[in-house]
Every structure is written in structure tokens, then in C-alpha cells.
Image (cartoon, rainbow, N blue to C red; front, side, top):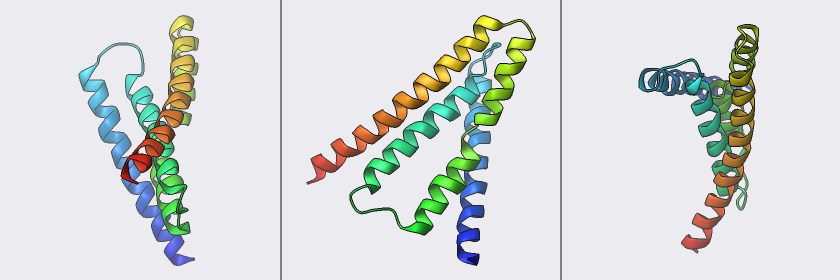
Length: 129
């Protein structure tokens, strides 16, 4: 049990730090009203989970790896609660079109990236055979 907690905490710490770096980079790189940092984190998190799931699907994912990657790292990295708060604040400030655009792009892009990551992993595994 202690080992699971250590994997969870280590993954969460790395995910949180990675989120801070990626989001901060996006906020410095692209200015404006739209929450680009949140979109970048959600999209890359979706790509990573799809890619990881596809790569590990054949051999299975050991429980400690699953705990570290999916619960810890991606739990700390992705930002669904931040996305929801930013969307609410956009709507409250009267930026309804931007709020709707944020909802659509985060959801559509994240789902597309999960599929893209998964199929990329399958293509890599097929190529390596």
C-alpha cells in the first residue's frame, strides 16, 4: 500500500510541475483572453493518455505504472477543473462566444488527441514488429 501511495504522489508531483511549465510557457508565448495554457495541457494530456494506453495495451500496464501515469501524473497534469472555472468566468464576463469556443475546442481536441495518440501507438507497434 505504501508503494502505491509513493507512485501516486511522485506522479502527481511531476504532473503538477509539468502542468505549471506547459501552461506558463503558453501564457508567455500566446497572449490574449483565451485560456491557451489550459487547452495545451488538456490536449497534450489527452494525447499522452491515448499514446500510453495504445503502447501498453498489448503487454498490459503493471498496476504501479498505471497508478503513476494515469492517476498520479495525468491527475496532476490535466486541468478539467481549471477549464470549467475559466469557462464559467468567461461566461460571467459576457464572453459567451469565447466560453463556447473554449468548451468545444477543449473537448473536441482532447477526444481527437486521445484517438490520435492511441492510433499513433498502434502504428508505432506495427512498424516495430
